[in-house]
Amino acid sequence: MTKRALRGPPRAVLWRGGVRGRLSLLEQTLLPEKCLRVEIEDVETLWGAIRRLVVRGAPAIGVAAAYGAVLGAREALVRGGDVGAREVAASVLRAIERLATSRPTAVNLFWALDRMRRRLECLLAGPRLPSGEALARGLLAEAKAIHREDAELCRSIGTHGAGLLRDGWTILTHCNAGALATGGSGTALSPVYEACRAGKRICVIADETRPLLQGARLTAWELHRAGVPVTLICDGMAASVFASGRSDCVIVGADRIARNGDVANKIGTYGVAVLARAHGVPFYVAAPSTTFDAGLSNGAGIPIEMRSPLEVTEGFGRPTAPRGIEVYNPAFDVTPARLVTGIITERGVIRATMAAVGGLLRSLAT
Ligand code: MRU
Image (cartoon, rainbow, N blue to C red):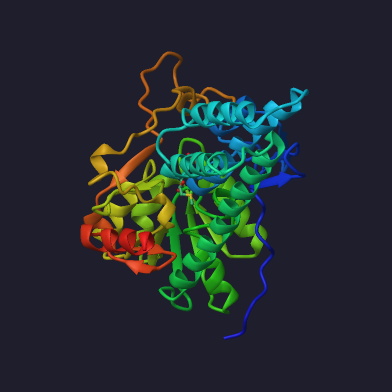
């Protein structure tokens, strides 16, 4: 098999400069029409950007939120005067609290904010109180470490997942769990990129992913840009794709995985899992350990974000339903563990069971 070079992934999240620098996000609501970045210097603007899905996808939200804590420090520093560590710390804690209210489902957000809070406590607990500037520098280093580690997690998921994919296979995916959704090359799409790089001929079928079309706007865009063959379908076409044998395997990402292996992901994922099982097609979830919620025994406790009815009735600026119609718009659903063939993690492919997930979490703790 001949190895292939792929175009490098787009960078969803970037930090520019030092502690008085800024957060640069690829403006994902404008893709694929426009490829623009937004530069963010304050916590409130980042909060809005997360809510509006300018940055989205569980790991990317976590990375952006980690930098959000640094924006909290920045806000205190640029107020001027002699800014001490206590003032900076108070501003960081306010940032962490605010950002935790931006979106409820992706656990990576809370994981990253928690890690930033622990780092803050650690920096404050040293024998001498650091200067406000030094405290901010310590937090920026931590946010960069979270970012770098996320890229490494994506790489490892890619290596483990690529081993499952045979030459000539077509993979169906839902929503976007690619580079745009992470600090690296993606979760669900990373095995695809890795297998293609190794010379395997892999094609992807992307569900468009109603109502906000992350599959059409983002997955199709990033795969096409990288040179990976991709075919776009409407969500309702998946059953006929499976029935006609056009898909060999499903890989999706995750926003939160409970201890028993139940998986929350973009609305519509559960339906794809049911269809895959009905047609004997393996259904894999690709996710780093930062997406596992050790505090939840099963998926019933996963908070599901409800979003505006307007996303369904006039998502792209033109009414597509009668005005005032009743709408139900949950952004995520929960796929029961029994429908999941395996979870591709940075440590390898595990079964979606309490024992296997518990084992993974224990191995990470040691
Ligand atoms: O609402 P979104 O676009 O943030 O939803 C994203 C998803 O559901 C992804 O599949 C999930 O976050 C995994 S991203 C690696």
